[in-house]
Length: 111
Length: 114
Image (cartoon, rainbow over all chains, first blue to last red; front, side, top):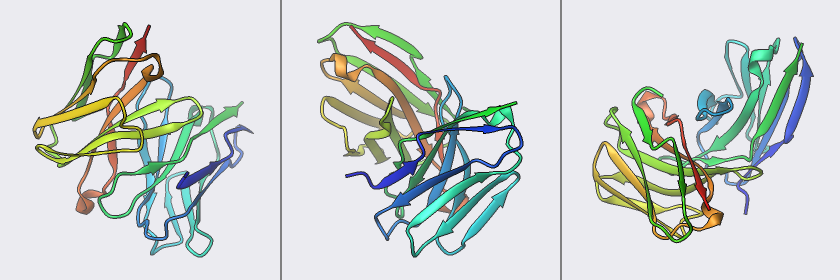
């Protein structure tokens, strides 16, 4: 049973484009929704996170949109750059329970 | 990453041998985790700890055991390594809810079982 479903598996965009990665969750008790960025050979790093009491959060070029009724959240990367090429993971948790991760999206930003 | 180190970074071992991976933190965080990362599966939880000597199983715990005798160290042991345990293993620590609640991951251990 996959608690967090992430799509697409891979994504190619032109430099300056706005890639969008989507996640859907099942457990309505989840109260913390982070996104992680991972470069080859490195551990994932926290990018941005949101709580269900807000519908959007921006940090620099990264935005999370959250739709509680649809049980979905998404990551948008504005003005994407080749340096944003990485694998992105969404995740969710309730309280102090461990994070459940999506399967990841490999993003390639081409110049 | 700052505050968390994993050792070794790479290891090749033979089927049937025991293997121990180490995770060390300097942040004094209560929660520590072991995940494995495999193509097509993302990050899957093996075991986690919520305090010294307090551990619990994750979704892929079969064939693995853990120990935490000190706050700073969390050990993952493969009792008898199998080829299916070839993977990249990540340790993570979690900041308290009042400090963002995010995970910090180590740099990973690439384990190959031959």
